Length: 172
Image (tube, rainbow, N blue to C red; front, side, top):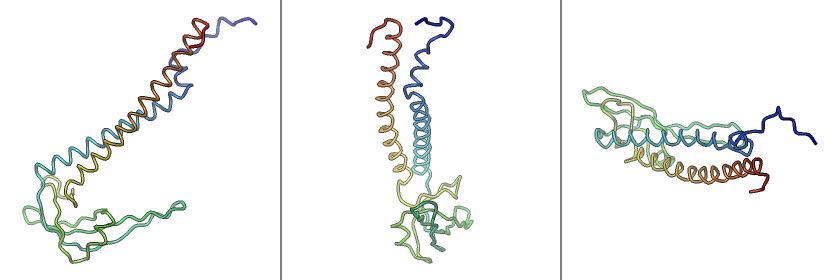
């Protein structure tokens, strides 16, 4: 069987992509999104620690939204808060809350929360909620990143072995 010398064999990166490397590239993009999401939440948490203004808000109303797409119905819980910011301006903000908070609050009740003076619509309903979200995203980032590194090594090793086998005629 004659070998056509005009056809160049696929390089290491081509082998890498054919052996599943494209999935690693997509996962790397997901890792970047997780990283920047965690950093964003951490920045907001630090802003609340440094500048958060505690305020007593009044619960105006509470309501639910149900997403009926697919087989599972997903219900989200919302509460409308009215509070006064520095300067006496009254604001009303709807906020998605945890199920427990939804069922503990009633319209007309008082509720302690925090807002940022430079962005009064940004609320912190439970203490350190932005920090906890950041920590959860960091944990997911570390878990996915660890699996990603292992798969990078495994697929890269296979691609390198394929290249070596092509060059030297041996199976590695």
